[in-house]
Length: 82
Image (cartoon, rainbow, N blue to C red; front, side, top):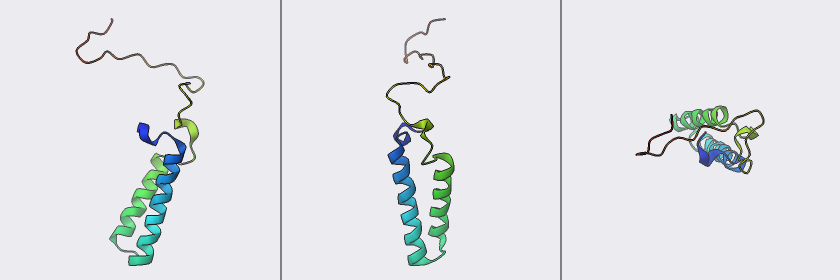
């Protein structure tokens, strides 16, 4: 998940924005092409970035229970330790 979408309020705002846009398209143009495009975007957002899934939310640097810290990657131009 993209870091910008980790906070729960941003995922909810994204879903509400797409829902409002979908309503506007339905009211203004009926079931025109943009209605179907926005519906696809909304369904993808709900499937890929569940608004009420708190597993991706930042917990202040704490790792979820049962997970291990990732190995630190060497910076570009530096050699990693074997």
